[in-house]
Length: 609
Image (cartoon, rainbow, N blue to C red):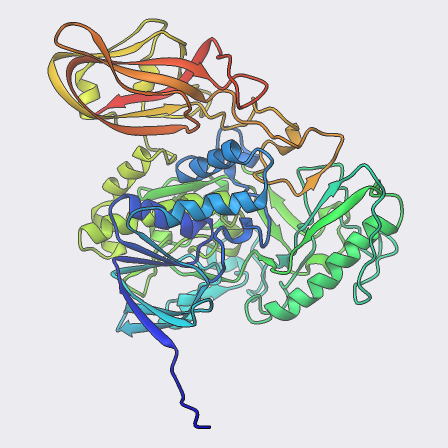
């Protein structure tokens, strides 16, 4: 029988922006750019989005607000988390996956390529022309040609493929003058971890480990790692960690094998060695894909340092921020003794630090940007920028900057030099917090006279849309009492922008307080009410916008009875001399599905355009 050789299919896609990597950084970059009119392709090597937050790895989202009051990330990150709290009250990881998928798959201007691993790049001097990935599910080579490329892959796949400058490991003290720097630089990194998920039942659950699992008869055998996760729900098995002493990219498979032996041994220790109160606990999930902390970091026009994050640095080209502690996992990982936290190096921050756009584009490849844990930062600064909440706001910043650059025919470096205020204004408008900057109210709003049926509403025009630095910056209005803009002459209003209180500190969310900052808990005890985790009571659920017509009557031009977002922007079309907001109800009840309404609505901004 004669056999004929066939080649795998090839597909070529032309777009404006190509993003490689669909973790939270890549997702936020893609959605942000697409919403601002840029044609985007998002190439992701896994079957789902979310990276370390996905159901494959199951690390919950942490960020600045987890450590410092009032610093919860807003913009796209808060939009995603509120969608999850609203639609996924049991914090099911499959539903979480679907929420992330929906953000990309149904966004106009965005083409999603899942199961597609970037393998090659075509170069023209110092410019990337295209990238090519192999899509395993379709056995197709996908080539994407674009104006600008964003590497959000974590491992910086485009570094090797494009020749972009990067570094691996820890710097010597003399390089940046960092007080925690080493005497001599090395290539050691933080390791990678496997997550465990379990729940408590009402009956005894046996566990038989595989024969190849490591045995840890005593706590000392397990290096005294803190394994009280069944009682302290705001922690996890982060310390099942290896890889910092080897190559955290090329040795991943062998590291994974060792992590599996450790992880099954740890659960065996908790279940079968000593009294850990685990008799009724059942294992739900043990990851086979390690969650990676560190590998390559790109070199940009600016390298963020330990001094920058500890001094709450400000930059003229600020586009994002962080606030998570310096959380430096030492390379030895699991095999390091852990008494007194000896396997970690920490310094808690009290103020947000700025992240400049110059740290988000390559210093030697003209059209390459990056977002996520691979930005231009020293190892010690990276120890705080690496968490997913920060990666998300960095992703939104990179996507927005790329969109502005493409719209103006500029490189990322030129956009930073020539259009930085435009980029910042868009980010502020999209509810991103930028330390040191204040959002400007719309021109039309500034022309109007602001009045309120109750209290002083002037704070809604101060350009600060959150509690910060000891100031509330919001207006506590009575429900069913109007906030009104009146104009000297008839004006055309095409849209409104409203920001309400989503309880960024999660103080008024029903459920276990230990879980309020956790997007998807890993440990679920029966003796806590975890079956339905709450939704922010402060969110304005029902409101309407009314305009004054020529007959002197108030006419409703927009209304909703089921808002669940912090930022609400809607198009309307009305010619009027006055327009008003009437808050009706907030989510203020024992269940997110019913509402009795609170007496007050907390509003940070209400503007018209």
